[in-house]
Image 1 (cartoon, rainbow, N blue to C red):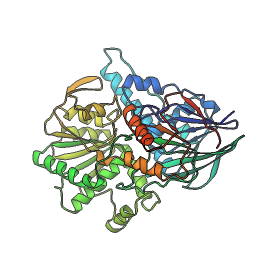
Image 2 (image 1 turned 90 degrees about the horizontal axis):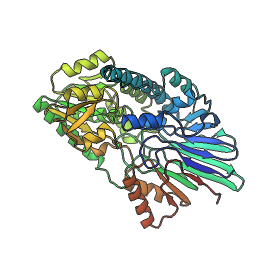
Image 3 (image 1 turned 180 degrees about the vertical axis):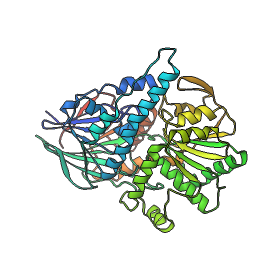
Image 4 (image 1 turned 90 degrees about the vertical axis):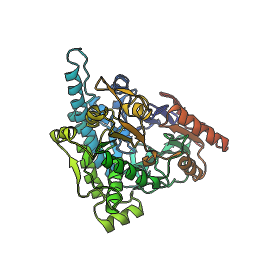
Length: 469
């Protein structure tokens, strides 16, 4: 069998990352993410896997975000026993995030079924906590740059991707009858300059590159603007005695926001209004961050600040909320206050309850601080929709919605072009993944205009043979 690559997710879209590499000796899956979007469509796309889980030899996991790791329990549910390889921090984070995903699905299904009892509508969780526990037992951590063999005829290394804590580019060297072949999967690629993370460095000798294109047609606002704009929003919130709701990914984005607010308060740039991190998962993830503050992933400037100033993720009047009853009380309390809560795309979790109770108030501000996939509630809010459905019930949007792109931990077009330009020699094949149609086409056109060949925009289920050089 020739070495071949099949795209089973994040091909023409931004979620559900799954790429299958096959040789005559091994079947290795790179990522096993959950598709996120309209509830009905996402359930249909997630509940069945388009490959045979029992035939997998290994899974190479780029990082812990649910659109890259969230479907792993479906492998256990299908009886797969493949080892799951990742960095140590990613293993720790997945132990939090995948279990939380199982609990969140259960809670959301119970609430949805309760309020739709009379209509007969029902939804069921994709997997249980037992399924999550089974797959977590198959994790095998590896340090950055350490070489290992996940399957016969394959060697691999994880390289810093600069996206989030523990994130990695997956380098795979596969032996074929026509010689060796080096494949590099970027996972989610970080920016040249971020608030917390070291920038990624490309390896040499890459034959085939799989690279994300989330922002392939755009340039981010300068990250240095983040402090000023967030400070302005907090000052306005204090003056209006309102609430700021920040739908935030529990991994990385929440910690970035807390870090900025901590700096602003230390500099007396914002009033000291209460800040609530209303996400048990974010609480647990922040504990993982604190255990890794001196680690390789973090930017030197951030590590120096943390060493000098102390805990970058804690300050007076910051409250980490674990219990559901305490969370519910926030909706009965008067502002001003800031509530940071998952999920980042407003597709589940406690943020839905805060939106449901506050979205009709003019003193509410909703800050969109991360990528919003098409079909999500977060995307609808970012697009300015005036009526939305939350738990299937319509709500008018009177809250002020602001989008802040500088928080993105994804590479923009300039970052991607810089990364590809530093690969030596240039890859023979470049596959653009993890981007919607418009962003991916824009990046492909830019690469071609710069004389870069071998650019492909794979579609779902499409297979490519990777011939040896």
